[in-house]
Length: 239
Figure 1 (cartoon, rainbow, N blue to C red):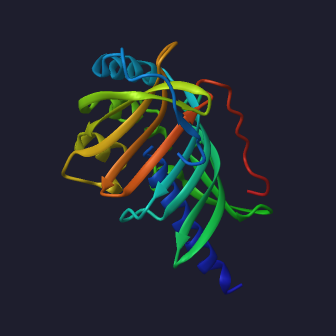
Figure 2: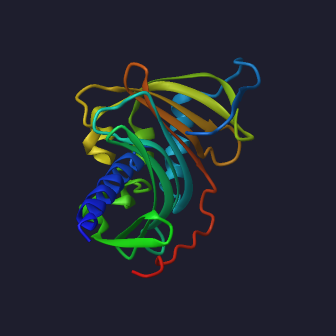
């Protein structure tokens, strides 16, 4: 089975790209301009409220896409369910570019172990997930997306949009390099990163969508939904 070591290296590379990309925070989300720009809420207040709500989120569904090209990031799309309670776990599907070709893979993180499959009928155990990426960072109240919201500077509410049926206020600003590096160190930057956040206008002001632009025209966009809904993740068969 001379192809097995190469296959495992390819799968490991795919999962590394997935994990590092999933840290940031939308693909396939439909938005439409709704409502007037008049009487928009105060951007700083809304960000503060959303950050607090996001800190309390224990599970969510994530849709992530990369637009353009971002150095060290092979990810193109990611769809995943994440939970930090009662234990850190995740499952999903991704598409990454490897050697000029698009490669798709399923993955599961359970009990601290990373499992991946390029073929739905064959799963592999890649050991401790933390050696690739600590998925708990995404919803971590101190360093995850909540911290991103807490570190937006010069925020401005610029309009209202409906994202997947959720009425949201669109806020633009800059995110500190430190906040980005904490959740995704492989996309390290020394400068502030332009960001746009869409925050639910009513209710508890949940984070609906966020976009980071590490370089001009190259963006990472994430949509969150199903906040705090139960997530059931099982160990893949045969591993």
